[in-house]
Length: 287
Ligand code: C2E
Ligand code: MG
Ligand code: MG
Ligand code: MG
Image 1 (cartoon, rainbow, N blue to C red):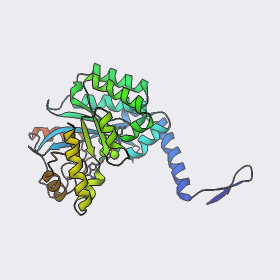
Image 2: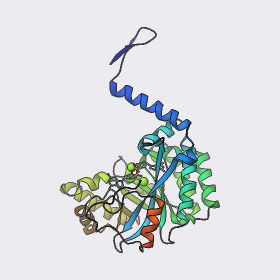
Image 3: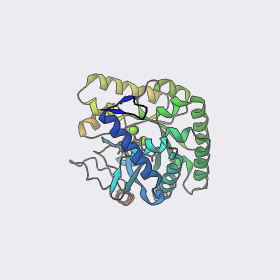
Image 4: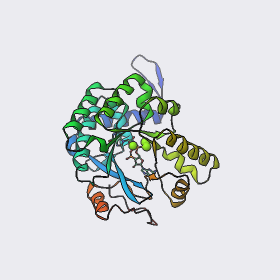
């Protein structure tokens, strides 16, 4: 794929590259013209406590669809970060999440994802603190999930922001744990309450003895630091049983429940938070 630019130079780029650029500017234009209050919604995915089969927490996952087109959060969140709109998205999403969570049983907490752009912005963080303070949902029932990317950019800034959330009474989880490079030193230096073991480990755990050793050791190590562990991406019973044997109690994944609508979540609560773990087929996604 080669083109001549206005100065007569040959610019070479791949079709893939061009496609990516076109997609990016398309998403950006759509984002800028979006009615975020209306178009942004949340799907809710329960995190089950396998000791009693009940819902311990629920993760709010952003959904955006426009004129029947669903954008993946991996795509539109990255684009919102790039064009400086993430703060606005986070405000809309957090407000919706806090509102929804007020209808949940007292023992169920809310997990809410923050992006690197959120952690890097004093303004967004101040807004988050203000929203949580003014909401009728108690801060101690909120866990903010952050990934290593937020920490790598500016450690001191990240530390200051996490301490602000801790002062509020909220909890902090390190998401996608194990995919980065220096997670262990972060566990030592930052006040994490929870670690979410990345789904790539769970995906290979059945057939790879090395993964089993790593996961077993990580669970033990993290626990010894007084930090709880959630295994993400449980898709079959073999994975669940292996993790149970490793004494991992908190699990999230399609086997247990897909991300669902707020109404379907309330139905699970009405069934006394009973786990759907015994389903042979994962429930059909409703979101
Ligand atoms: P994440 O926070 O690690 O969320 C877990 C992702 O794994 C979700 O994808 C979820 O639907 C998916 N998942 C859950 N169980 C399974 C399973 O058993 N198998 C497989 N293959 N996948 C599973 P989703 O909703 O597409 O979100 C992708 C990412 O986008 C999230 O990863 C998070 O980093 C980001 N994201 C989503 N919502 C928000 C948000 O409100 N704010 C921010 N900043 N980021 C968000
Ligand atoms: Mg998450
Ligand atoms: Mg994750
Ligand atoms: Mg992720």
